[in-house]
Image 1: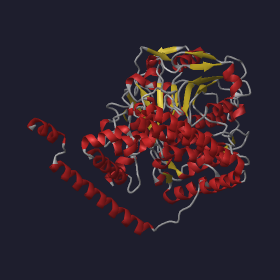
Image 2: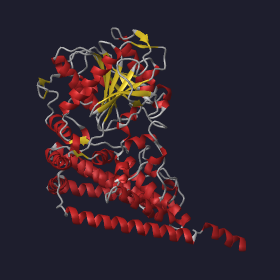
Image 3: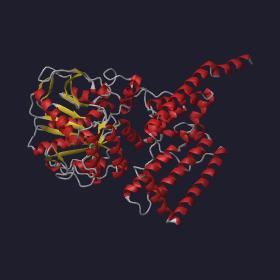
Length: 609
């Protein structure tokens, strides 16, 4: 009996530790509340607005649903029949009889991976009840007669957010894993979770900024962004990094990468085994990459034109100056690809043929179908965004990060709510999520131009639709050989949208559809042997993306090897020269890679302030 009592005592939380935890939580909560009230008193309480037009969209949807009561009643009746079937299913399961579920989650739905969701009749009932309700709710609002496409997209998107938020996996008493941990720890997980919640609110200065990873586990240049190289040039907008060769000879034409300025460049240099810049260098490319500055209010005036003149064009000048070559190969990722094509069109108008080839990673040029991002970028939303940007001179990086996270809320929001706040665990160290949380700002003038001329008015695809430095931009005059890689599950730059842009340039184009999504499909090293890709070898791209994919051949492994074969097969692409060491030619080293610009983290700055 005494042994049993001793075992029970060992499972009980230490009273001193409990008291200390409660005191820390109370102190942090008091500090946050005081700061929040002081901030509100200073700033004033702004009236709520509806920049995205969500309320208006749902009012329109509701009125049209009510106009067809028969269809609404039929939907309710179908849902009730499913509930009757579920009750019968649950009764039989309680009696130990095997029976097929009425509703089952998708195989890739990680919310219901715990075996209790399947084995325990009560959790199984809650899971199926939720899935039935979710399915009927979605089916009711997804295709309402008379709604315009933009309104329907808003209704679908925000209904999905509502459905995801109400999943039983997001609540302590209805998640079997959290329930077990709560009983086991006597509620200590919830106290620790509250402390984690308050820490995140404190870091966000009153706004919730969910930690996705342990940021203290990573250091740039130590365990991420580790490929050896030198910063060989810098100006107000970017640092130019040249990577140290790993081969005795390198290809004659250097290779310059233009990353998006909405993220840090080191997504292409996370770790040695999945670093594209290291892989390209190992193949014999003299690899350069632009590391964009993380701007503040001093750069508010910098425009899209400045990013062209002082960014991509200057980088081209410096790479060719450093290597002494007349041409180079280039690649642009997402927004970096949009800038790259704008640069090529600008150069075509100037009869400048210094770019031998251009590769576009998940790049949109025709924005007529922007996917779900378009929900956040109608004219009302952009006007509200511009008002906030003009007040401080830039778009705060966390705002755009939140938008991207909402596109995959279950993976990038709710999974961390469960782990951090309900389970009371610290986020796991993960290099990709470290990069994802390393958000960047964007100058007000540049971002406003980009949103209005690309997303809202779709002028880039039009001949002379935009003018940069007095030069009308016409993509149809670009004859540079182009390689487009898009990914079939991309939720940021949908592949069918990028396909439409790939049909614009006049030169030879290879379009490739990779597996997976916007990041994993691009950062897909050959050694991983994952995802595969599709290529249709037709000389002229079919008009529709569906026709292209229908006639495409699937290949295993990474598209990286296909790109390497393509770029070296171009005229002069296989010519080689002795390896070029950074700092031994025209440009002198200023710093070791990864340089200073990339090390500026906004969350670190806020803590320091």
